[in-house]
Amino acid sequence: MPDTVKLEVFRYRPEGEGEPLYETFEVPYRDEWMVLDALNQIKDHQDGTLSYRWACRMGVCGSCGMTVNGEPVLTCATYLEPFLPGPIRVEPLHGFPVIRDLVGDLEDFVGKLQRVKPWIIREEERSPSEGEYLQTPEEMDAYKRYSMCINCMLCYAACPIYELEPGFIGPAAIALAQRYNLDSRDEGARERHEVLAEHEGVWSCTFVGECSIVCPKDVDPAGAIQRYKVDATLDFFRSLVTPGRSP
Amino acid sequence: MKSQARIPTGRISDPGYPQASNPEYTRHHPRWYRRHMPIFWWLRKFAYTKFILRELTSQPVMYATLFLLGKVWVLSRGPEAYEIFVQWLSHPAFLAFHALVLVGLLFHTVTWLNLTPKALVLRVAGRKVPGWAIVGAHYGAWLGLSGVILWILAGR
Amino acid sequence: MRRARDPFFWGLFSAGGMLTALLLPALFLVAAITAPMGWFGMTGYEEWVALASHPVTRGGLLVVAFLAFFHAAHRFRYTLYDGLQLYHLDALISIVTYGVAAALTVLAAALLILVV
Ligand code: SF4
Image 1: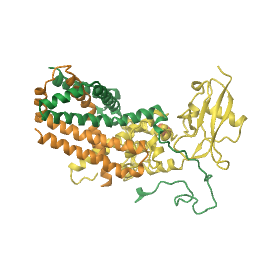
Image 2: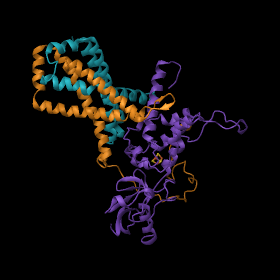
Image 3: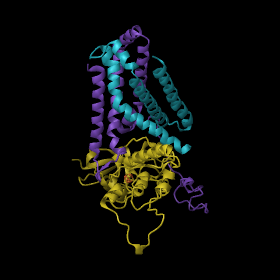
Image 4: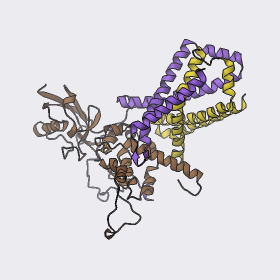
């Protein structure tokens, strides 16, 4: 087992020379260290200007996503060990404009999440005195998987279509829309359909399938998209044979 | 209409930008670095290469369909035409090419059937049918239909 | 109308994908490889003509051809425009790919219905 391991870290300083470069750091190797621990070691002991996001260190905040040796991962949940002997290449997530070093811009992603109205929409709210909305275990099972998303954007980074067509609403936003569409308490599917049925909604997707593979929470956005395509298509053909129904 | 609202670009010139009224304010440094997708992006990862190969099976599918129609046409031109056709087809070069087409068709079949549980969510008696059962049923159908075709066309 | 385009072509794409996945390997194997090589059972001209002129064969083949052409056209359209990054040419690519599929379907119908 080595004493140290080398990290090649993507550096971009917007105020500086302009072109990004890779800087190599040598950090002590520990069996129990994650990639994030190595970055923290650099920041604390070698170069305090290194910029990256992290918060919880336990795989729930979704902010430490980076590209490690080409794969989008949560750096707080990725051991150094499998990459030995190194060097380990750490880059920002693909598909997002880089603000500085390993920090990408979230604006586009957050805007897209909001567009699918990820909240329960009711035609008529029930007043608290009428009691709670009850749900059977099967009804909860219908959407639970999609509710596990932590907005880490790894699925966007894994999706070549998002990188090619930045207008694409993207995997997590569609999974989140389905999380509410499939909720028995929700009545907002029509409103979300406005966004999802655009070409840049579900129809940009060509089912590369990588989003579901990299997702740390097993949300399966690819499945959510595919199901939506099937349902929208069936609805469309049904509306052809049933006059009076609009697609 | 609400749904027509543009996605915010995050640029300060964007009317949706919260601080658009104050041009002095830069929330983040405007000099973003954008990486561009190379034209050979599908070589970057094995999974992407596999994806593009899967998509290219559209060509073997196209060829095989045209071939079947072509065969019907040749059959309508009489036994001599068919004889020449068969001679061409048994040429090693043609055989090798057709073996390649067949590999493409099989790749299409396998990738297509493997993805069926993603598109199909079935409930039987209130229980979700597991993915392996859906894939299994489709493979069963494929083997069954192939068996029938082989039996009719080649089995007797 | 714009909204109708995507589900319509995607519906043809998936129906064609399923049908070709289930049928084409076996059909092609026999028609293009084993029969010309004379490997198994049905190899003679007469037998093939009898089969190929049967109305059920012809009808089935027309359905397969129609869906297979549109399946391939749809897939190839996306391959061109994502694979080669030709977004600005989407309209042209769509017209050409779906147009070829439609023309080939008409030719297939003419062949299967008119040519005895
Ligand atoms: S779907 Fe998965 S990969 Fe995508 S943002 Fe949510 S948790 Fe992250």
